[in-house]
Image (cartoon, rainbow, N blue to C red; front, side):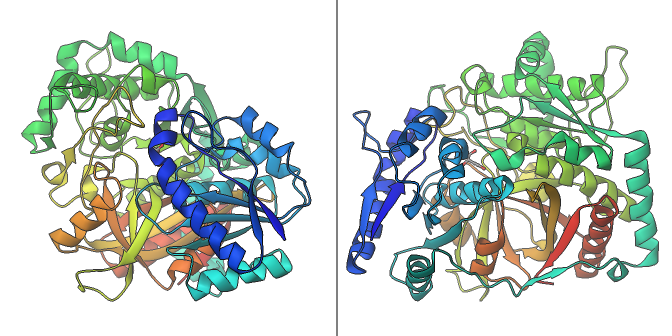
Length: 528
Ligand SMILES: C[C@H](O)[C@@H](O)[C@@H](O)C(=O)CO
């Protein structure tokens, strides 16, 4: 059988050319495996003179698909972060079986790219199968591939899923959830969206019609307004924020070459944008905000990540209004990275429930980046690398600000630099979740887990195997195997929040499930 292969890439040519060798190596392996099985893998688009073989725009993807027989079996293979909208239009009219596939490697965010495509295909209502492998020779992969070749689909183990039933939550916590839901629906809530849609993440956009019944409305803001407002903030105000973080013990790894190193000027500009973002959130009454950043703004201003980590922390530098009053003093302003609105909605619900239960509100999304057994032998579990591409709230790090550091964002992604907010998440009980769109409705997957402390060499190994600049949570998910998680998860992102102990985590999970259900979101308990 002849099988078409397409590879979607980044919009940034610097990322495409840097990552191409990893993609090529993966495609060669896949081709060899399929040849052994008696099939031919046909690359449906060429390796370009620019030095890579990725589809790098939506139009290019549409043109590639117009040359593919719509009834052929087709594999979208990803070893890198990719923009789903490059291939989504073509996939909407493809009739043959679709397989999304990634290599189990931390080197580049290929698994993350595949998971985003899966979430986007799910939201678009398209049928697909999905598979992953480290070396393309394990039984799980070979059996799955054989099943797909034979039947056009792969069924993953979903025995860890069960629908949530409201009587699992205590009457007191159901009342808390109902009060929050009533307040949202009556008083209404605003999510501030600084340029909707980021990096082709179709799954991350919630149609307004699905938010209206929850009382949630978007304020569509422009990154140009944020850029302008940041430029208006005097340098000394930015410096005061920078000093505030250093006084609390945060480490900034500074250099002198802005093209590849973090400079003080970049950090001060990030602080100016933090101040501008807080004031805009206040001006428009936004309960949460999301800054898209990665297109447009990335050419003008250092990365928004440090800003996002600062916003997501209750203990953050004060920002005053013109009259001198402090904006939401001592309270985090939930920020959803990459304007992932599903994460933004979840974060607002987390803030409200966790505050009502007296639990920490600090929450962040992470990429489901990679995972591996613990090479130090400290635990037997499979340990995930939850790793967001820039910043976690300092409250997630041991010692808070003192246990946090900032490194320059990689030049291949972020030409104007900017610092991250990195740390290794402190050990503790967590509740994880993901809101997603499927069948033109909102759904929530939720479960329990633990963040682990691993020996420094193992933390370092995991960080070096992925992006050293970015924060990590060593995550263990309760009752869910690696492959169950991969087979089910409908997004590249996973939301995490801490609880004080296991009982508190379970209570918070069930209270959040009750709130979601009350708001009309269908809830699946995963692994618990
Ligand atoms: C910098 C990259 O574009 C990352 O933002 C990307 O890999 C992601 O994190 C996607 O969630």
